[in-house]
Amino acid sequence: MIRAALALLAACSASAASHAPTDCFYDCKPAAPAAPCFYDCPPSPPPPDKHPPQPPAVLGKLDPIGERVQLLREAADQLEKAMTALQQGNRRLAEQLFSTAELLAPDVLEPLAPAFREGAPPRVTTPPVQADPKAAPQPAVVGSSEAEDEVDKVPAPKIEFGSLTGAMQIDGKRTTGAFGLVTLEPIGATSKPRTPKPHILEQRDRAFRPHLMAISTGSTVAFPNYDPYFHNVFSTSPIAAFDLGIYKNTQAREYTFTKEGIVRIGCNLHANMSAYIAVVSAPAYVVTDENGQFAFERLAPGRYTLHAWSERSTAPITQTVTIKVGRNEVTVGVTGDAASGPQPDKFGTKRPPGRDRP
Image (cartoon, rainbow, N blue to C red; front, top):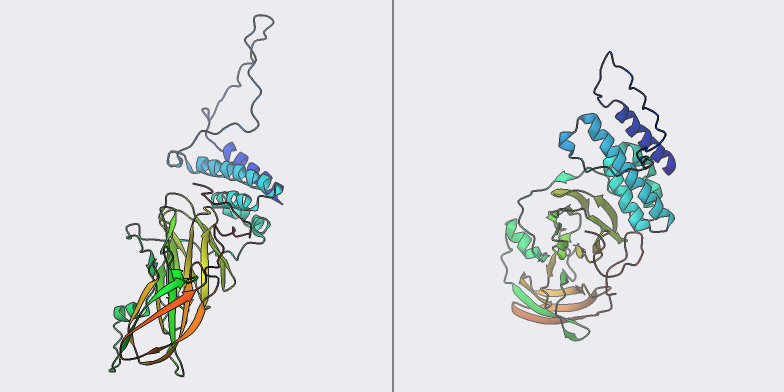
């Protein structure tokens, strides 16, 4: 099927090229045959290259047929490279090359997608949407139930509150250079689910921002690209496995997170890029700073189940805290047992540290 697509692309480009304008339109005379040469002949020209290099074309200066020819030639070249990479077992490179070809000739290459994406997370195929090109950069971390309540102007119950400040330790040591999450659920009481919100996790300067984001269950996150090159956002998390594919600068795709848990986000083109989305159903939550410090300013007195997690942990820990009117403090300890280094690509293949592609 892949070779058939290559043949079809070649046929399409040849058909389009056959309609290109010539210098003669009517009453044309056949070209005179070249005179024979028997001695002191000029050297014969080299045989034509089967795949002569094409000069970079400025599509804006081509007519519609010329533009189509150029796109089909480029798509065929990328598809041929993708097929070679797939045969050599480099699935990640093969899929990247195929995705580039797919952008150039989607109508021809759509049937071939399963051959290049088998084993990857489900693909989000909705068309990219336009992102705000003047948007300010996102902060390093985002996520606070109390901050959301302030924005939504949720009135506070008329009771005396307690506050809770705390520090997160990793393997019994002070946290440095790692963000985390703390959630609180009242024991013996039901709480109203929080309203899902739209959020943004951007790709900027070859990094994800925020690096950690806490959101309510059911929230939708947009992933705009603000770099002058492609990214490929994906997750292989069991609670939210998806593949956003590649899209251009100031474009975005979205994904709605319907299940609670920690989702690690990666870029299939750049191994050094990673981020975390904490999908939370608890009524109270807050992200820590990079030193593990956190604070809740407005808590009803009572007993709570506290969950805490760090980006260096494989799973959250659980403990019980009692909140009294006034100031309260707590120290929470999590494990540092998460694997270091870049996460595997979207096919589950391990990657070396560093930047894969510009």
